[in-house]
Image 1 (tube, rainbow, N blue to C red):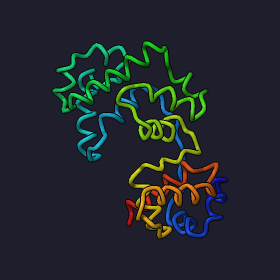
Image 2 (image 1 turned 180 degrees about the vertical axis):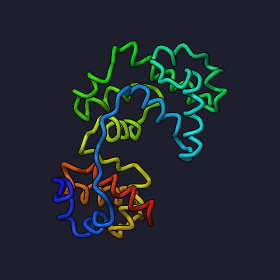
Image 3 (image 1 turned 45 degrees about the horizontal axis):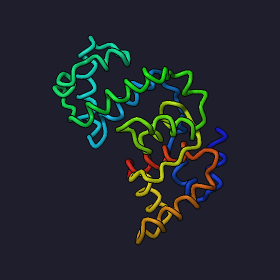
Length: 200
């Protein structure tokens, strides 16, 4: 049994969630700038619609993954035409410009701590705290990230632990207290909570 499952199983309520699911493996992604662009494109969209837009996006480059420079060189109107809003088009360009100007690549990001990655990427207009947390969890393979602002995590934890949701401050305090027990595997805990919520 994997180390993280043994650790998280100490939480009796969480053990029930784990018993229903297969273990999760974190996968380190390449081309973080592209993952970030895809993340921006998919915000506030259903998975289905996001997939359609991303396929249209890749089609602009002959179905190959474009470089940051190629995306930056793509005219604003061309990106708008695949279904991106004005704001998202600007944000995608902002990401690519930032990576080029900062000389930022996967190797640099892999070496950084979670805090360093967040401080770096949050400088990009259009990239918020939640987006950087998703990058840490699903692209950079950081094992101990807890996106307390994520609605899915809030809903799953409220249901599983019968949390008091009368105030945001109280909810966050309860969530952080519970999640402390999950360290250093909070990313895995969140993945299982998302799955559990979707299966309910």
